[in-house]
Length: 320
Ligand SMILES: O=C(O)CCC(=O)C(=O)O
Ligand SMILES: [Fe+2]
Image 1 (cartoon, protein in one colour):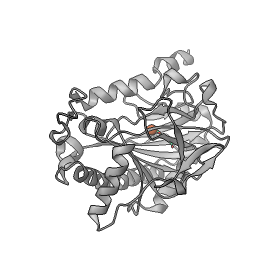
Image 2 (cartoon, helix red, strand yellow):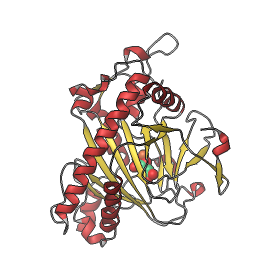
Image 3 (cartoon, helix red, strand yellow):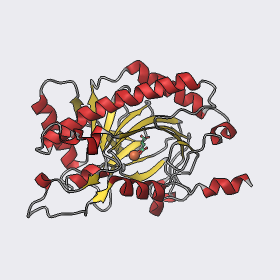
Image 4 (cartoon, rainbow, N blue to C red):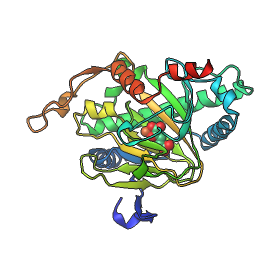
């Protein structure tokens, strides 16, 4: 989107991203819009995505209710070794080089399983399961447009070893009403790109998400992404950067707190864990030589989750 749409939030520019209509019959237009966004910075708004607005709203309702529980209750659902469950404040440090305490956010990773001792377990389970499945359908539509934009067959990523048997993860997030101060290393979420294939992000109407459109520039310039209710912000993940040999870039982003509490829902699409992430034949050339060696999806993810989350021993020690 051009700069005429940019507005300033406290001196930091804020721009609307390109809108891609995910139910448009004009495939050519969607492919060319996506290509432009992904060549530059891997981020756009997905509209008319087909996931139910009421369902999305219900996930926000459940999320607010969950994070409103006393900490002692939430700690009973502390995440497990497989990174499912509750992550308290500071559990994640997304940008250790620039942060002091860690992210000023708490989260809940929802996989296919349901927290059994939640008082409204059934309702929670049904809501999350339905949303996971609707978001997965949206992500698969985006994956087909991505395949076309990389000059592949539309169903390239639908193979069982890639997205045919994917690992979809929902993460409910709650940011404290804190004012971030980058000069002191205080962030809602430190700068990072997402680890997997792609992320669909739904936010409330509190601004906070910032992206860096040129992650190779020094110093980095940040701009706010305007929150748009009901829309998915689509972020390309590191695996697509690796597959495409940096032709498509994963989105460098962070969250800056403005003093208001903020809720968001991230849907991470991760390929099958056995999947080998290696440069696509269409993405290597003399001008663009191989940038990353092949890596098994689970090796890459284990490393990134491990590097950015606290060691569970920290909490075990707190119990004694
Ligand atoms: O809350 C947001 O807007 C961003 C969340 C995020 O970047 C993440 O969970 O990876
Ligand atoms: Fe992220």
